[in-house]
Image (cartoon, rainbow, N blue to C red):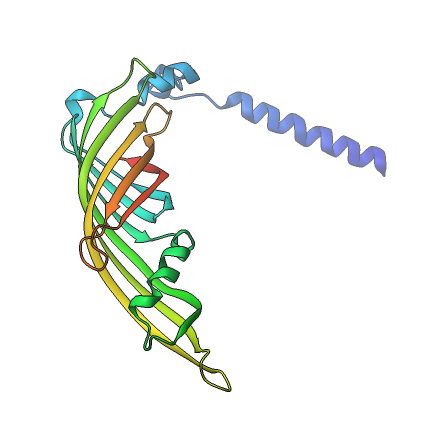
Length: 227
């Protein structure tokens, strides 16, 4: 029985080989070959930001403070516009929000217990000037610019009245909507085998409404798909 099965298997295998040998390419397909591109050539074939192909667009994510969905328009090689929408890293502002409790306390005798950030969204737009830094590294651009940021934050404060006996506790909800200018400095790298750019940037935000004169450094790293 085993010898019979072996014979059948060999027969079927030989039949498949003969069928494969009879398959021929058409006259058209025989003229073309699948191109083989080395990794080094791919880096040259797939660059973005070619001088004669502006404008470009890019969309991606930014991690840091704040965390955001980021969009960038490159109308020319040296000028760009960017817009970010996302959420601030509220944990970095814990001391600041704690210190702000005195602005919302219902009584001079109330003392801070704790707070919680229930909403902390922002929108930011920027105009950027960028220049080639390929003397440092191939595909590198430096940029600087100015913009405007809108922030909307909701806070929940818990407090107590230590002067009363027994102790009395309370809470209050606060909504803060503010805005102000930002100054940005960063660099962008775009020399990959895919149409992707990576960037790192640092910003300085100045509050102009709720807490005039308050400054805060922000920044992060991100990736954008460029098309």
